[in-house]
Length: 364
Image (cartoon, rainbow, N blue to C red; front, side, top):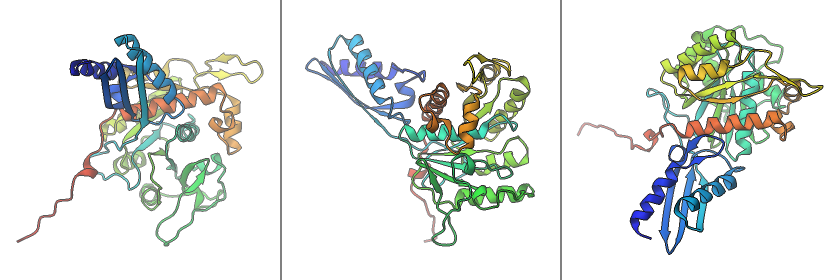
């Protein structure tokens, strides 16, 4: 085959849409090599998001599409994964040993944001990513209980920094590790932001692909300050379908855009209630709120998650749904939302600032 044919193969490869995420190879991956010679095609592709459980399905889909397009029966597709750092706010420096910080936020409390955050984080771990979870809800830290680490304390080797605790392959840090569970956090805004900065910068994160930040609910001064001081590469808004929840979630989305943080999409939680007795599903909180919000703001609807009593039971037990019942429909919904979120992040611009040399001007 001729070089022009190889060029056509490359072009066609970039146009192939990966099943389940609705994005093309050009958006979320990089073609390392595309050879066309001796009536055979070899393609080597580097995926920009973790999907170790779907690589074989992607590889088969791409090979079949190539064969159908070119008529070539000898098609070989090799796929690897490489998660790179993406850009953060211009005035902030990315965290050391953390490639991407993703904020999980909501305009109000009570929409299940923390449950979504921990299940999405664990879903990314299951796909082969190195993931950390920072509980930024200083007033109501819940992650220690959700991952079965309540009562544990982080260790410090130098008296200045802390090693994150680990659960289920997830690195975790929370103010809940440092205070008594019944102690109220009677702190004003500046103390809260200072505490979060310490948790963020004095934790020795270990080579993370993603740091999932479970943000405090609301859109007030604390949330705005955190959005301006934490180097975030993407944000996800969690809402429920009802109008009251989406009204506040829309404010949260607008807040991130004001501080130049890309909004990766919306996750609609409690979309339908699943009856524990008969399995019947009913949209008790209404329907279409998350979808309308995604359309109005031109962002992706990353997932629609069920309201199921088993999710609450599993999270309360310290073993979230993705781990406790991995074959359930709820776990599949969390995994799909996590994959869509990571793919949306992969489609964002890369961070090249860390690759630039430091320039020092001295008097001669």
